[in-house]
Length: 327
Ligand code: 8YV
Image (cartoon, rainbow, N blue to C red; front, side, top):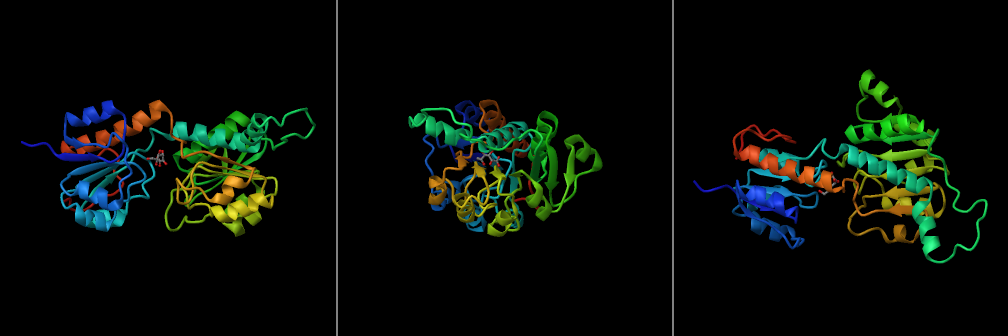
């Protein structure tokens, strides 16, 4: 019997592609070419499954150009690149990679918070530019992490990881806002108090965004929300581009309406709003929150395992939808 045909849409660890070859007829992309939606659709025309990263859009147009496609395994926990309704209607399963990246991403969120509040990259640029000629009492004075109030918007697994780091490691007071309130046990574990979004923005010294991107979470933080924040506050976005109105944020940073921001994700990435590139009080990283070798390997392996389990008839391990009938 012939093997199912799989497309690996971006370059991933070669040994994990080799593992997929034991089960499937694999077309991969070792040169990591960024295909247009049309090029992706052409490659998927004869495929039964695909391993995607967060940057390939799976929508109704692509699904009709790929009539054999049965399963899309995303190597990411976020799956806003999937039009889940269109996939479910077409009988196509989607999977993601939860849990395996939680602690690594929470570590990074905390690192970005610290780098932002303590002005690490801004001061490093100053030093590298040869501008450091003397110590002064207020040179790169930032804001404290320990003992301050941490506001987390989006209290899923990663948000909870950041809350625990803040509460237990740094003695922070943690407030959070989420679509639904956590159980009393989880709130106690995270030492976190549920508050409304407006109260969180008004009272937090540091605001960290960890919400999934949906049409409802688009521009969760725009000019009006930035205006509620303390002028000494920092804002960190490790969620998705589009959760923050980047143009409004650049204005708020330039006018010092908030102290600083740390951004790992951007509207329209990899293009970054030009005004963010010119303001000094922002730490910018290229979507690397989950980027450690063990975690990226675990993500790729989980995406591969989802494909293998699906075609073995065991069902996917971490599905994001449940079509009533499959293709
Ligand atoms: C990925 C992410 O690196 O898991 C997610 O949702 O944002 C990152 O961990 C990125 O989406 C590439 O797949």
